[in-house]
Amino acid sequence: MVSEHSDATDGDTTALALKILVAGGFGVGKTTLVGAVSEIRPLRTEEMLSEAGRLVDDTDGIDRKVTTTVAMDFGRITIRSGLSLYLFGTPGQDRFWFLWDELSQGALGAVVLADTRRLADCFPAVDYFEHRRIPFVVAVNCFKGARRYDAQDVLRALDLDRGTPVVLCDARDRDSGKEVLIRLVEYAGRMHTARLLDSVR
Image (cartoon, rainbow, N blue to C red; front, side, top):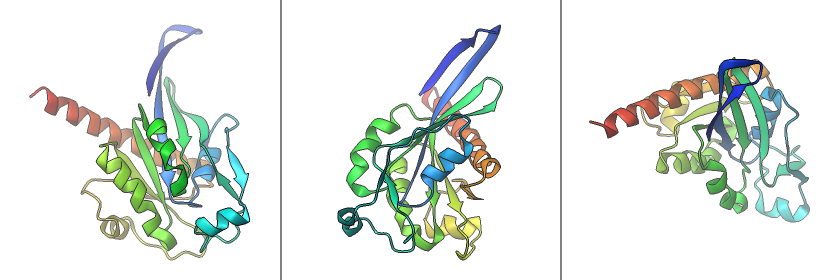
């Protein structure tokens, strides 16, 4: 989703709004990231984890998690004057994957959050965006007590294409989350420009 509108206070200013997805496995920090960076009160669709849900949701390593996103999270952040990002956090469980196709319509790109304790949980999101040619960055959420790996280790472990950005972050920290989003916008911009040039050759 790319939308433009004129700023009422300055007739010469055109604001650009870009749609970004925040994806990843169950309990990886998607809701936390959207909430940390959003300049508006984020929309959340969280429900308490039920005993029935615990039977199908793998909570190994995230035993203290008591809620789960059942539709999406939504937030907004202004990167600079005239450029805003609309953030859509996806649900992490397999049974809510039917929502992803709707949420991904018109997206510039995606952030795939990863937890090195449960790295395999982000494979489905990586596959989803690769197959749909949606540019993405992998953001490793550095949980307290988790073993630290550098970006190259994660890139090799996920078998990512060369050039796919991998960044370390703290989903709770606004500045850290903003840096992830800036990296994504820069990378997605380069990817879309390259594809456009290829299409006219």
